[in-house]
Length: 248
Image 1 (cartoon, rainbow, N blue to C red):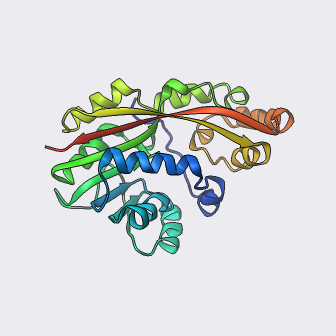
Image 2: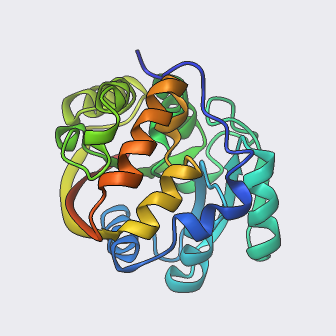
Image 3: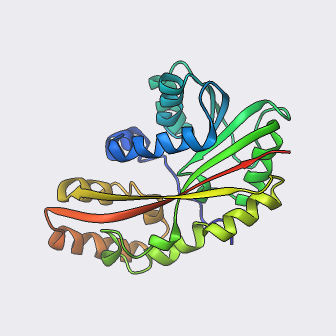
């Protein structure tokens, strides 16, 4: 499987998404890895699965990029258009990008690849890149599944994400099958902490899309346990795969 079904919706969480998933030191570390690995500085960039536009804004402001953003969620794009006026946003799917062949120098996907039909999305990313263009991807490493602060409360969560998140070997194969040259994959490991209040706010709002894909009774039972048992501070590792590959 390349995408879980049903596809999660961001309709309800969009107005609070930036509050629930704020830009912090860890976010900037991933941003810097994307810019460095993808050679994004000053490039004509398409942000696929742009959400509320945080990455697009940072690429404009800190990397002098010319950025277009696409997302399937009208609600997320409404936030992006209000907050990031210097980026051109379009509502579209990653599997059918509304741009002509070879239009971009770079395509970037941060924390979005698991939401798409990966083979189709990667082939489309390749299509819209000019010769020698490059795709750069930041996606959670499924090797970390089961080690996060929320895993003890939701027994099926790790298995749902295991079906959604590509392991390194699968990601390399899918990039090659999508038309790209030999990919390069780096691993970024972060040690993170989260407060009890922030953790519960994220759970109650289903700020992680996987929470929409588990049975509702499991979610309610897990939330009840979390409200009872979460410590004041939780520490956990987070592993990223940072992949780059060049178009022909």
